[in-house]
Image (cartoon, rainbow, N blue to C red; front, side, top):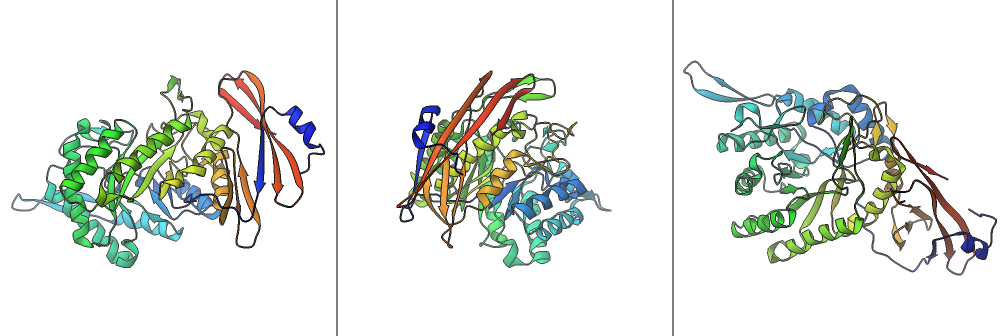
Length: 448
């Protein structure tokens, strides 16, 4: 876009200048896995009309390949039950009515599950500890054999219904964030590693072609957990197929009423933390280069942070998407929509929920970040901290620019002036400007 100003005028006005040279012969590293997986709340929510409306809206306009969430074995899915027969013997019973409804709905929208095995059915649980409004049981099984049987019977049912060749393409992850006491009783590392081992072998017994991974940890004591997990797998000669972890980028929340406010952390801190995971895995020769999947990522890790609904979130996530593919085979944004009940049923459409769309199928700014990245197919010829440009097979240029502004400004302007130079061609200039104003509800961002 021509601003009507020459180069000297723009440079005098601008505090920050970025010159972008577009050279068709140049190549920059950029691996775009933006559409591999998207997150969701617990699986039972897929039985709701608004949930499926939001997922259809996202699939029609972006289109993800896989979907990953909690609660496959939670009691609201009603898969596992125990009863006593006429002789007083306790037996297991399986009911796949709701599972079939959910999976049918997913596949109709051309999205496959990234299966997270959890949480524990009440009848099979070894304890009573639960998490969230919907009370997912987070204790080990009282009977390991019945847990393994539950996993196998479920997979066999899915293979019978949808075909083995289809279902073996669904990745399998064992549990969620066992390094947190809230998600795994006492955050007991030894017990989780044992659960992973028996579950890994149970899945492989059904079909060795299944890809199975873990430990699905978040960023708490993560260096020790990843290292000890790799040591365990190596010592037990477990040929784990991929490694999973989570990635959130905010500081501790300050709670005010129904909302939690957090400041964004330095993105470089998060990238260094992710690099450490890659380095630890590669220390083990048999696992060097193994795929890493970020099965959850976002800015804030709480579902009531207003930042999720802002332009700032969209810009910060754009920067993340520009680099997360460097070392990760997928990075699953948590979540696609705001039908979500970890803290209870939301009071209002815009409540700081995780979703790309708010209730009522209203797209948030971050929705468009994903939509833009979905179209970045081709060869990357420019990448910086503020921009990505690719050239597609037809020779057309596509790009995205973002500006992450400071959070502690009371009233100010920030801008970057970018000059685009097509090699051996003309120069064009335009301004990307953003006004930041502080209000009593947080920060309001207006892009000009």
